[in-house]
Amino acid sequence: MNSSDDDYDAERQFDDVDEDSVEAKVWQLLLLINPGDEETALLQFNDYREAMAELDADEVEPIEVIGRVIDWRSGFMVGAHDLRSLVQAVNELSSRWNLSIDWNGDPDDDEFYDDMDAAELFSIAYDRLAEFGYTLWAWETAGDTYAGWMTLTRDGEPLRELATTLGINLRLGSEVS
Image: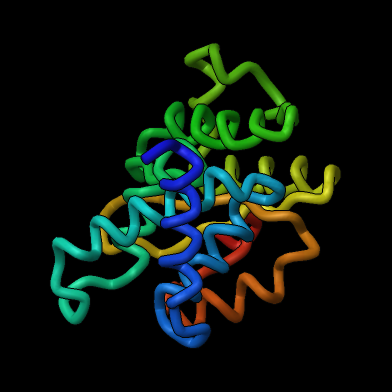
């Protein structure tokens, strides 16, 4: 079996998914957080399916698995006090679309973080990304972490609807406190 047969099998398997299923909603979400990059969305969707096959779907929230399969590729989850990792994660996501964030200072300088907190960094990134037609989102995590992803601004309403359906408490990056 060659590579194109593998791709065909993956597409055919996805065609069997009920449009109202959790899997279909996860697929739609992955497409939104990977704008213009269906290949990455498909890889993450396959990772999601594999991970869910090993778990009891009734005992895990979809966002727990989504967070793992997108981490540092299409989303991030960082410690609440690890501001340097937050900046690095947002920079990494932004670089996917050749965007650069002006953080109002030098994040490579330790003093930059002296008067900053995660909410302020989210707000700066949110404002800068909005200038380019992107939105930084955050979702509520169970632990002492911050998590988020980016979408095209025009995809805000569909993302909110999917998040509600999937039980994800989602907010704009500018609303992080």
